[in-house]
Image 1 (cartoon, rainbow, N blue to C red):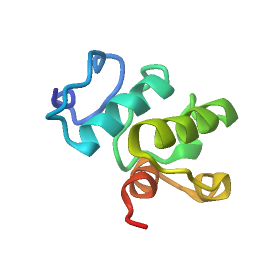
Image 2 (tube, one colour):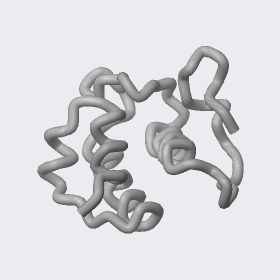
Image 3 (cartoon, one colour):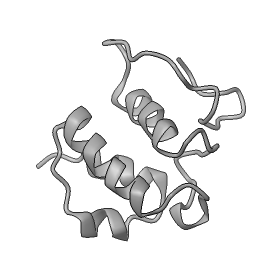
Length: 94
């Protein structure tokens, strides 16, 4: 399912995950759930997102491990500035 025509992800992005979905689509859907439907883009700055808090950060760490097989250092997540930075953490090799 593509993002809303505005390019934002959020409340309208609910549904089941299909095996054919790209990593970015899966990531964006999971982030929409973590952020409780708050609108965001890859460029959204985390410190300006109302629903990005310590609980969302813990949820993100769980999602990274469960959906992407990445055990991330919480400090790396804390240092991320944007949604795109978080995406890079879950998709980088190594």
